[in-house]
Length: 127
Image (cartoon, rainbow, N blue to C red; front, side, top):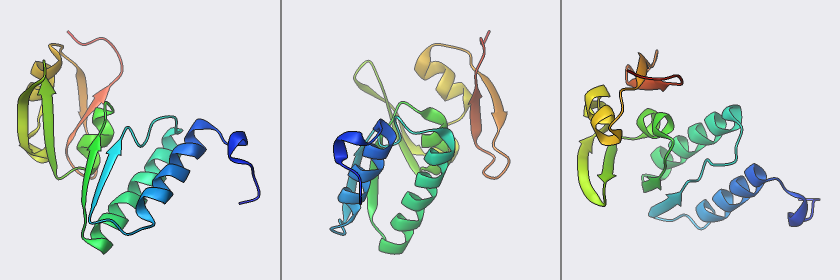
C-alpha cells in the first residue's frame, strides 16, 4: 500500500492484478498466464489462494497457461489446443502422459505428483 505501482516487480504486479480481479466477487474469473513472473514458492501460494477462493465462492475459473504442471495440478478440467483445434477436453485426471506427449510431439520425462497422483513434467531431454 505504501509503494508506487511503478516500483513493483512483474510478479508483484501479477498479484495486484489478480487481487483486483477477485475483489468484485465475480461468478466467472478469466485468467491469462496469471502465474507468470512469479517465483515458484509465490506461485504455489497464489495457487492455494485461487483454489480456496474458487471453493469458497463456488465460481468458475478459466485459466490460460503454458505452465502445464501448474495447470494439471490445480485444474478439474482441461482444454488443450493443438494447431488451433481442440486436442483434448475433459477431466484433468485423464490428461495423462501419452496425451501430453502427443500434444507437444515430444516425449517428456515424468514423475507422479505425491499428493494428486497426476503426472509432473520434469526438465531434461525426453526420448
